[in-house]
Amino acid sequence: MIALMGAAGHVGSKVADLLLSWDEDVRVLEHRRRLGELGERGAEVVGGDALNPEDLRALFRDADAAFVVLPDNLADPHFVANRARMSRAITEALGETGVGHVVALSMVAADREGAPGPPGGLHDHERRLAGLEHVNLFLLRPAAYMDYLLASLPMIRSQGLNGSAIDGDLSYPMVATRDVAQEAAERLARRDFTGRQSRRLLGPEDVSMRQATRLIGSLLGMPELPYVQFPPADVQRGLVAASSDMPTRLEEFLKEALSG
Image (cartoon, rainbow, N blue to C red; front, top):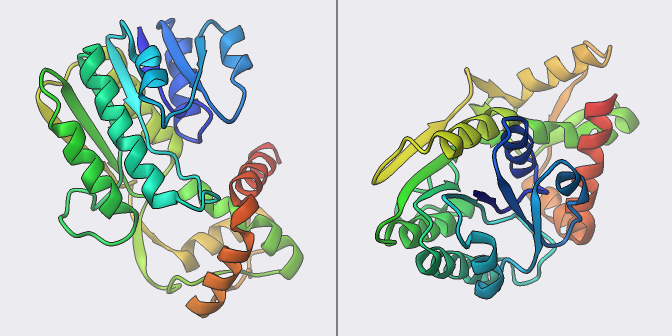
């Protein structure tokens, strides 16, 4: 049995899809979003809250391997505190249920002490997981998800431009969520790791936002699509204003883009 957290997410859903297609026994945690489709395909669906150690014990019980993730619920007013609570709940439940192999989704730079932003919180999460005795741990540290670039499609269509606070000429690593899911699913199925291991997933090459914008524009029939760097303060105000429905909007944007 392979237990999965985050099976409604952009990576976790792909992990579940792959494992089920390989006829693996899969159990998923149903929290905010319904997972009936996975249930119809043969997954065991258990309801619960990822902040509750008892619910996580039910997910991990008798599992040979587990995929664990701290979801990015940007609408949570206690985002940082609840991620720490969830990390402790996951660690407690894994320790009590005796899962032998754990694949944990982290991110680039989470191995660095004092890293700012999300890697900093994930650094503490990695340390908690690494403290589990008798658990073989594999940490996946992907770069930025290139899929999230598709969230700009509404702006591109309405304004005829793409933009963010990122320097348009700064190249940095990007990776597709499907490639991250492939690595996670293979590790969970094979369980071929021991002790404490990790892997960075960086994509085939570094890409700048200007390059990505040109590619998106060419696919949309807009070869001259410009990229604009917005003032960080303006972007911050916009994100704060939109945070209440950002996860839902991002999911809708991605579905629209991938089906178009």
